[in-house]
Amino acid sequence: MTRPTIREALREAGARLASRAGAAPRLEAEILLGLALDKPRSHLHAWPDKALRPQQQTGFRDLIERRSRGEPIAYITGRREFWSLELRVTPDTLIPRPETERLVERALELTPEGRPLRIADLGTGCGAIAAAIASERPRCRITATDRCAAALRVAEANFRRLGLTNITPESGEWCAALPRDEGFDLILSNPPYVPDGDPHLERGDLPWEPRDALAAGPDGLSEIRRIIGQAPSHLVPGGWLLLEHGCDQGAGVRELLAGNGFESIDTLRDLAGRERITEGRIRPHPA
Image (cartoon, rainbow, N blue to C red):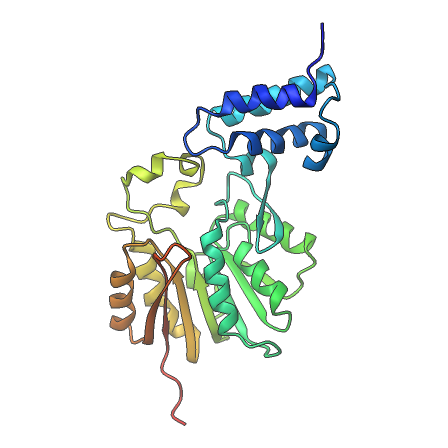
């Protein structure tokens, strides 16, 4: 029996994946064939007429079947790039998304290079936010917390593999995991903020991701309320709190910050022009 070439296998897989809404069938097929062959995508372009061995055919077919059932590419490959860092991800962690890089950008604006500031990343998941900041601000000391032990193990493995020694993982829920005897200059989080029952929870990759890291009560603000209520006692005077949230939640988060004594409250937009990050500051000491 004639064995399919790389070109033929990609064409067939692309056709199989094309029916998935929002899919990039050719790109996904190349990623999965590269995984099956243990080769970079450049190899596929360089050797399109190379025939697949039977074991490679079977492996590739299995990967395409998983993707056709909706399993996210990141969980199939076990990898996701964030802030130019390759991170391991598992079904115990959310898949880092490009819009969260706006949170990192703002954190870096508030932490000038060379200053040894204390930063906390609450609900670190796979460690994407903490790793990005740690790689850019090596003099800062970062505490990365998560209530999910399995997710924290993934984050710790990512920190070790990336050689980031300025991050301390801590197990626990939100600010309860932070050391009581230390004040932080910046606390940030990408917490759950999707309302329970929101139809988006059943679309795209979301059904495969941990539900308790996505949904947060009837209005999606239950966990944000808790963080805002807890954060002031862990921030130094002049310290900042940064929160990612849904595009229609900016006004609600601003109101919560104001009600808990924060000042300099502002909401930043993502690249699509949607409200995405809201920040507030604890009153500094008088000059």
